[in-house]
Structure formats: structure tokens, C-alpha cells
Image 1 (cartoon, one colour):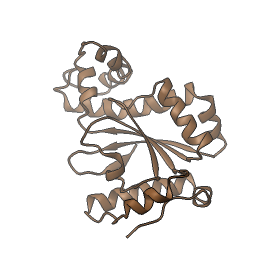
Image 2 (cartoon, one colour):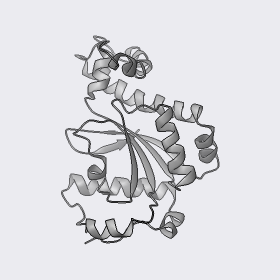
Image 3 (cartoon, one colour):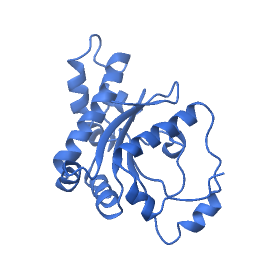
Amino acid sequence: MRTTVITKEIQNSITPTSIITDLLEGNKRFTEAKKETVDYLAQVAQTVEGQFPKAVILSCIDSRVPVEIIFDQSIGDIFVARVAGNFENIDILGSMEYSCKVAGSKLILVLGHESCGAVKAACDGVELGNITEMLSKIMPAVKLSAGQVNGETNSSNKDLVAKTVANNVLLTIDRIREKSPVLKEMENNGEIKIVGGVYHLSTGKVELI
């Protein structure tokens, strides 16, 4: 049973590459139904005075993508930012800067997922209240993907949806680097890595892209 949490010493000793490996190994445990047993209350007690997460993950709000669970992570392990369509905005960028520059996290993972409802809505050009503005953040990926696949340019085209999910992750990473000189400098200095992945609802597996 796991009872300990990440300390500052542990956070200092790990590398961005080792964190990627750790997350993927956790996802493998998840898909094989071999998740670690955790004493959450012991971890609660240890994290009262502080936290030293190793990574920050930007994910969709989709209820089928519970980030800590699919990576077999626990209390104090990771920061998680969630918004429909897993794109960046000024608040999320600030949160990522805090996570990495202030709190010491060494990895940013932008995580899209199979059959994303926000991506499908963007592919269909849905307009409704504040959803319209939200989906505009995903439209660059839709337009890019439309030129890379054959068939209908709406959500009935599974290839278009899948390609848009991946492109949305990659374009989000590009914009993180563009809009955050703090994070870009940290990445250039080797202090952090910024990577992308896609979670497959059908298998529970995360694949890096």
C-alpha cells in the first residue's frame, strides 16, 4: 500500500523524461486493472503543509477521463487543469506557470481524448451562448484537419474528429510556447518538457503524439 507523497527532495531528483515514463506506467497499471492501493488519509495528513507535484496535465472536462485515475496518480502527485476541448487560455497559462515556475513541476501534458464532444461540436459549427466562443478556440484544429482527411467536414466523419483531436493538442502546445515566455524559456533550458497525448475511451490507454 502506498502511504507516502512526493516531497521536495523527490521532486528535485526526478526528470521530465522520468515523469513521462511514470505516467505511462501508471496508465498501463490502469488498463491492466493493477492500480496501486493507496492510503489517502495518510497522504492527506502529509500534504497539509505543502505540495510538490511532478506534472501539470491539461485535460478535457469529460467525465470519462478522470485524470488521476487513468494515470494511477494520487494526492499531491499532479496538478490538473480541465476545460472542454483541453485548450489553453490566460487563466490556464497562469496556472501552468505557477505549477512549473513556482511549485516546481517538470512536465506539462496536454491530453486530448477520443470522441471529444467539444471537438465534435466544433466540427459541426455549433453556436450556443458562451459555447460559441469556447469552440472558436478549437476551430483552427478543425480547419487544419479538414485539409488532411477525406469525406464530410462534420462530426459524422470519424477520421476528421480523430485528426482534430490530435491537431488540437498539438496546436495547443504551440500556443502555450507562443503565449508563455516563462514556460518556453523553461523548456528551452531543459527544466520542463511540454508534450501531448490522446486518451482512448475504448481501451483506457494514453498514447503520446
